[in-house]
Each structure stands twice: as C-alpha cells, then as structure tokens.
Image (cartoon, one colour):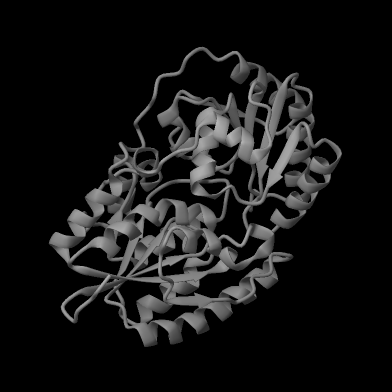
Length: 375
C-alpha cells in the first residue's frame, strides 16, 4: 500500500512456519492500516528446504518482504545453533539500521528471537511482544520468552493468566493487554478446505480415520529420549485399523532433523498409513486439524487452537507443562503402553464442547485498535 512520512513503521519479524501462522492476520491489519507501514523481515527456518521453504507461503499470501536474513541455521548441534544466533545479531543490526523502524514486533519464544530483540533493544527500537507470559516448563522456550518480555515495551498476552505473569515479572501493568491467542483468528478469517479437498490434496482415503501427528524435540531432553518417544508414537498409530496419519516435520530445533529423517523413512515403508508433509501451511494445517479424530504429539497448536474445535489431543511429555489444559487434552507419558491407552481414550471420546479459554478469533483486530490509540 502507499505510504507517507506520517505513518509509523512497524517491523514484523518471522522466523518459523508456526509463528508466521499466528502473526499473519495482524500483519494484514497493519498493512491495511492508514496509520502504519508494515515492514516484513523473514529469517530462520523459513529459508530451509528441509523445513518446507515456507517463505514461499508468505509470498503466496501476498506479503511484500522487505528483507531476507539468511544465516543458514544449522541444527546439528547446540553449538551451531548458538553460532547462527550470533550471525543473526550481526545481520539484524545492519538491516534495522537501514529500515529504521519505529517499532519491532515479535511473537512467542523461538530461540531466534534472542539476538533479534537484543539488537532492537540496544538500538532503542521499542519491542511489541505477542504471546508472552505463558509457561512451558519442559523446554528452553520459557527462558527465551521471559527474556523477551523483560526487553519488550508493549505486551499482548493470549490469556488473563499470562497477562498476570507479565505484570508480576515486570512489576507493572503498564502496556499489558490481554487479547486472546492470535492463532484462533484463522478459524474465522481463513477459507478452510473441505474434507473432500483435503483427501484429494493429501492423497487420503475420504472414509478413513484421520490423525494429525506433530512432535517437536523436547529441548531439555536427550536426542535418544525424543527419538524413542516418536518411535513409540508411530508404532502405536500404525496399529489403528482404518486410520491414516499425516505427520508434519519437527521444528528447526536440536534433534529435529533426526526426527524428520525417521518420519520420512517410516512413510516410505507404510505410505498407506503414514504421510509426511514438511509443512502443511497454515490453511491446510488448520483445515486438516478440523477433520481429524485426534491430534497427537506435543505442539502448542493442540493446546491453544484445538480446544476451539473440540478435537481430542494427546499431549506427550513435558514440552507444554505449565500451560492451561482444556478438557480436550489427554496428558500422557512417552512409553508405548501410556500412548496406546491415551489413543483408546481419544478414539472413544464422547462429544467435546468447544472451549474458548484461549480466545475468540478477534485478536488481530484488538491489537490494531490498541496500537492505533497508543502509538
């Protein structure tokens, strides 16, 4: 859109497929605003072929990308990840120096955020943070999220409890607004695919029981633990009669690449039972989520978005420990017996009511209204 010198420049950074899906509608609101100019920076896992090269999804949605920051993230070791973060700080200092945004917007708790917000903070660029104040005790995300909270100036948590956590951490309620989780906006604003469209698109049997498997490495656990957990899940899923599972790739975390290689190997030997898609993209992911018998893994989407649909979720391990669990969530351990017991519960679950604890699908509207008044 056309801009003028009176418009405030809001720079939005996205580094992964999951967080882009949550930022998308706010980005559209900013882009359509008469008060703000959207600057979009794309980095991190979006640029990796092994993660689905999801920068293509951003372009397909019609966004103009101002800068691409490619530091060639290597997730083969924590040392390499830390090295990539150092490179990211260097690159962002120059990019932010060129673009001179009035505000920087980030979401969540990915490790890429640390060098980005550190750079913005030192350069006196006010930080707008979405989805702070959550608690996930089983991952390093907790420390990252809280660090971003302490550096940010404007806060848009998804729940009242998260807002209270931010206020307690910062010792002030200034610039903290509880707005709901942004991921729910897509259920109301996206044109979701029908079951028939999904069956054709993904090569699934229309009449089979569909299952969604999304597992990310628990970053406080060993690679062996993570691989054994995934193997236990897949073994249990393969024994369900008349079922087909779509598995998405693990995030670009340490251990994620090995999980993805295992999933690909299994999919080649059992293509009628397991289909692996590196990234479904926001629209296909939410459309498929709406059609499944249950979700299994440890993705935050099962905790924050699935309750709105009333879909059973089997949450494995401690990655999401500390979050509020709605009644659709079945918490389980990582051994085969526990997983199979949870699958039986999910398959036989009676109708679950839609739960709107995490929001009502109007988060982006609330945020843009607040920013228009406050900035």
